[in-house]
Amino acid sequence: MDKSIKVTVIIFFAISFFSFGWLSHSAYKPVHRIEMPSILDKIKSTKILNVVLLNSPSTYYIGPDGPKGFEYDLLNAYAKHLNVKLNITVANTIKEAIEFSQNSNIHITSASLAKTKMRRNVFNFGPSYFEVQEQVVCYRGMLSKGNFPKNIEDLAGLKIIVGEDTSYNETVEQLQEDGFDINASYTSEFSTEELLSKVARHEIDCTIADSNIYALNQRYFPSIALAFAISSREQLAWVLTPNSKELEADMYSWLNTFNQSGKMARLKDHYYSYALFFDYYDTKMFYKRIKSRLPKYQKYFEKYGKKYNISHFVLAAQSYQESHWNPKAKSFTGVRGLMMLTLRTAKHLGIKNRLDPQQSIKGGAKHLNQMIKNVPKEVEGEDRMKFALAAYNVGMGHIKDAQKLTKKMGLNQNVWNDLKKTLPLLSQKKYYRTLKYGYARGSEPVKYVDSIYDYIDILQKSNDELYSKKNKAKKKKIKKKSQKN
View: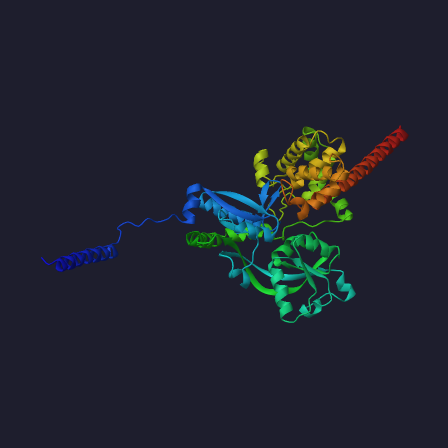
């Protein structure tokens, strides 16, 4: 065969073989495609749900009986649905929460984040779970001075501070772009609650807060007042890790069921309904109830005061502070009865019916006795009772945090008069972010203890007056008897 023809034949077969191989490879489809596990699959496999939670009263904080907060409870309910445990990373600011959310190991970030137009372009939001409205909140005293704002135009010239990297920040900047004269500054140093406190002290004129945050704080800061809503209705939602369609779909399905079951309504009522929350009464009302209500329960205060080595005056005063001696009292947090026991505490104490006066007083006395035993031995005298009462109100963990802070500030951590100076600092970010148990409304236990001791003084005086009257009546009776004889 001619050499050139032989070469041509070889090339032809080579090309044919290559073409057949290429076509065969292109037409081949594997029978089994390997699927990568989804984020939801990984969560269920590891039994861990990694979440970021903002340390704030509307989201997550450590209460007397452990973790609390609307968003914490909601997340915990979802974790139970998945049959997994929550692994919490605590953030002290919204900015910090957003930074944590960028960690690839984080599944959900919960920080009361509104689905604003700007954020929708950046974050992967899950389903909405709460509706809020941004509100301008100002110092109530401005009403009498005539400069209390009624609309956006009235904000001109007022001193306003809002949180940096918040939806309020976005709202103010948008209004300024629209031509409104708003003299606002931004801060990452203070939380929204701290800014509301500044408004209450009139250190600033106004701030902006979501309607739910204002609702939680208005009873603690009576000097603040709602001016007007500055935004339309906004939806709060969790930020989900990218590429988590299965997790998002499961969350939508679960939340729909959670809503339809009525559990969401009960959870909102638990944190935001104050219809049954008792108010403070004046001294005149207290004296009236010493006569009308106290006699019904006096024997129980004496019985269990003796059993647990606690003055019955202390138990009676504490009970009045808790429930105004109303055996059916119920607070917005779900605690009930004369001594306002939580369900968890009642079960721990062996109390089956919190609404039964005797059981409630027994449980309260036993619980207070435990608190007294847990007070550090270095705390002496009457201060032991004050420390224990404060722990009954806010939890022993926060008391120990306050002790550490008190010592750090050069004060005596074992003296109540020094501790009451530092307890309120537990609500300030620059302090609680360094402490083990984090945020606490530290001014509450201070007011709680002070009120109880005011009531103790009145009870003791009332008892002395009653004893004096009985003694006089007895002497008068003896005198009359002797005169007859």
